[in-house]
Length: 332
Image 1 (cartoon, rainbow, N blue to C red):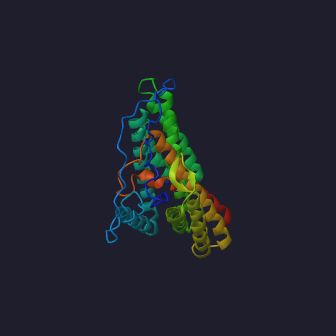
Image 2: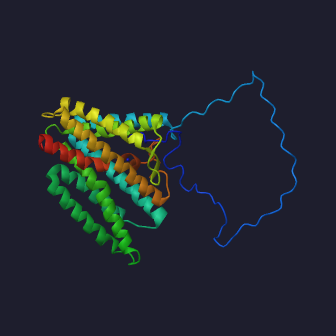
Image 3: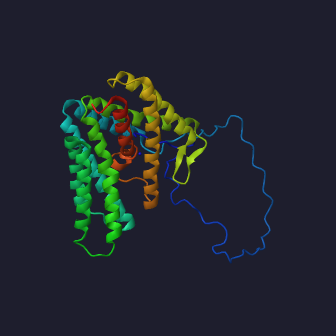
């Protein structure tokens, strides 16, 4: 899922066409429209020509579909909180990740219950999700896996206290939520454990934001060919190329100047991978929201939607960046 999303070349929002299908033709296949006699109508008159000095209608401007002022303000505020906590005390930033995970889980489970009647157990997910992030930071990958397993077990047991009806779909949704939100977010905590952990996390955030911004800027200005019209009509192939170009340039600079032992060519590969994972993450949550029939996961962040609407690109990108950084410069 980024500060601002990619939007279509002629404005609008990626989910604006939800439910916009109109009925056309007969209501049933057996219905055959009968020709009806048309009443006599007078011939249309020619429109009067406009005087040469008449004011011309102003051309319509492209619109981003959101309050960009609020979106930029909230984005800058979030960025300030993240950077301050990241470089002051690592443990504080781990707390920021845990809070984002809990709020994201609340948004996801609430929408599932509202739109699909699926009751994924929030309490074990929230407790286990926060514990997963902390365990990953304190104990590394092994701690994250153990916390994930215990969270899954807690979801299964917690749901047993209710009626058997819907048990399978509820626990399945709970396991999906546990993997999708806290487990993927744990890789951010794993990045933080390195000696240069704050810089690794900063590069991860920077490349994801740059990728989304490049997709938005290029897609808004030059986008013509749809990337995945049935999932996210606002995304274009030109926007994807913009995301790749922006992310690769930012990756080369970041690896060369911000990561110890990194080189520019590693940054090119890192940027390419980030552009791909961020785009897939955005499309993945768009698929979820279309299935649920909603535009945003929440309303907590003005101009952005909910926390999950900002984590969509970050979550699947976190393990990709962690793995490539370990492969390029070691675990630190």
